[in-house]
Image (tube, rainbow over all chains, first blue to last red; front, top):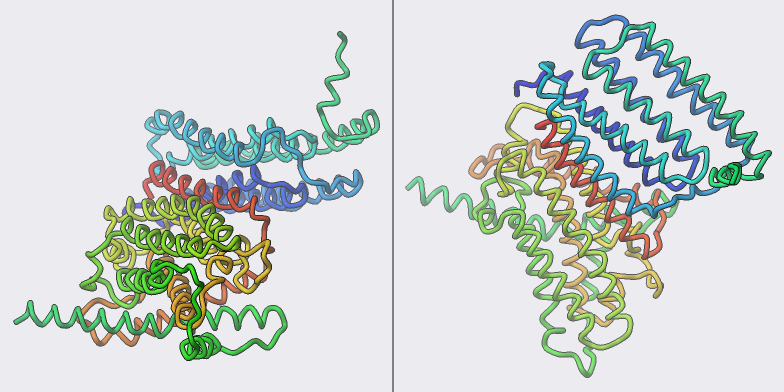
Length: 220
Length: 320
């Protein structure tokens, strides 16, 4: 076959990324959701590493290491601590039932693949099919944020969305400048801290993490 | 002479495979049960227990219900015949067997469906509550599993540009090794279908006679003696056929070609190793998973279908 082996590995990792996005969509437990998020981070880090190796761009090694540190170790650990402190290990509540969500997910994937097709025609790099996958996983994470009722799964969805964007950046354009990547990584970390504080405030005000309570806050 | 000789060779290979498969099928079930026993910290009944059960059943006198129709009597033979035919079509030890062109993958799914229709009809034939309960549940599970299985087949057919199993296997076994992400999805979907279709743990529990949970056992409750033996043997064959399909689609390396006697022992050895690994994996899966509620089964199988569709989509996107 004409496709080099590294590209095959990147394709495989991209598919795993999409698969994990789907698995997160179908997940009923918060703890397994966080575990899946860590696995997605690992797949992302591995794919960044392979891109770095195949294109010999050294700054991508740093971003792979950064992803590994941040998204596989620190963020899941933070989230674990959060749900321990908040004592929220209950099942995730969804607005739409899960099979329907999965069907909507499939439609989103087809939509994303079609949307990305003309964009990838412009690209000459061999990894152009990956834009569609990255777009699909961003949309799936967005779907997860929309369909979940509780705050913690929504935040995991947000972080997973960032994973998809990061994957699009590394695979399609071989990465952003290191400064940008560092900035994003810091943003995500700080964002998680802020979300943590937000969770506590939410619980203190409403005695629950159900964000539908926030609708009461508006003036009529 | 060459044409005639190659035909004879093909038939010899076919015979070899068919006999081997029938002889091996109970052993595979015994191996899976033994692995499961080990994982559950029991000593187990031994690898040869299914053979002993079959012998015992064949020596008993058959008892039939008063109102049993001829359909009830012939179903075990049809079942056994269907599974044996399926196992003859699948390239298990060699490709390009003379039986292989008889059916492509779609017809193969049809052969399984034929067996399923007959066992369900036979289950309802006597008119006991359990029989029709099992038949309905079986239909519920299989109408969801079948499209997923077809999608899995379509993914590999798209890659190899053929729906003929020997051609698919040939493409994967003899070309340069390529990673196919779409096949990874198809593989996952296939494992789910295999668990559901062979009445394995998350969907059905093969070792229980607890009325609320059984599917397969509920259907064959009325059978006894040689009929039951044939039904059991057919389900052993079905498990072997499914695992062989899995091997043929995803890890066909080491398969022999018709007429190549030298490679045959190697192919059989490779097959045995793969079957042993697959059986142990199946036992491990069963030990790790818990039986799910029957109403969760549609969701579980829906996941298989979605995975297979995703595999197809990814094939179109990445071309791999």
